[in-house]
Amino acid sequence: MYNKLLIAIDLSNLASAKYVVESCLKLTANNPDTVYRVVTIIEPMDDSFISAFLPKNFDKSVVEEANKALHDFTQANFPAGAKVQHIVAHGTIYEEINRIAEEKSVDLIVMLASSKPNAEGLSANTVKVARNTTKPVLVLR
Image 1: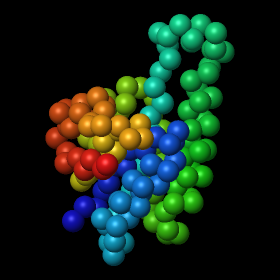
Image 2 (image 1 turned 60 degrees about the vertical axis):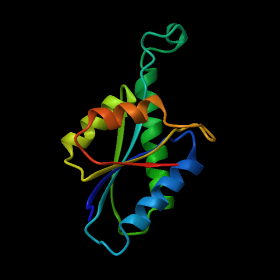
Image 3 (image 1 turned 45 degrees about the vertical axis):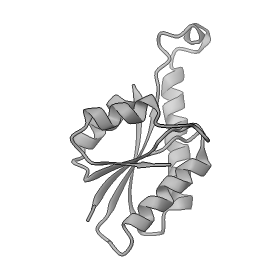
Image 4 (image 1 turned 90 degrees about the horizontal axis):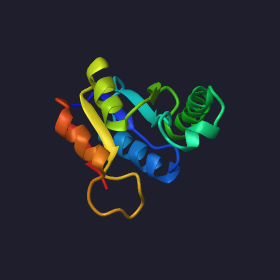
C-alpha cells in the first residue's frame, strides 16, 4: 500500500493533471493515511535568449503564480480533508522530482508518460526520473 505519493503535474495542461490526480485517488481509495505531495516544476530561463528581455525577478513571480494556481487546482480536484502538500520547485524537471522524492521519502512517484497530449512513448524527463531514482515510478498514459 502506498501512503506517500509524489504526484508530478504540469499546470499548463490541467486536463492531464486532473487525470493524474484521479488515478492517484483511485489507487489510494479507502486509505485515510495517504499523503499526496503534488509538485509542479518551473524550469529556469537563466541562459535563454528570451531571459534578457524579462524583468530581474521574473522567475520568482512565476513561482508565486504557480503556487497560487497549484493551490486552486488541488482544492478543486482533491476531496475535502485529503492530506495534500503543495510543492513548487524551480529547476530541471527530472532532477527536482528525484530530489523531492528522496527528501520526502515518498513511496511512489506518479507522472505522465509525456506532458504533451498524444505523444508517442516516454518524454525525456520521464525516462530520466525512472533511470535516476531509487523509488518506484508509476507512469500514466
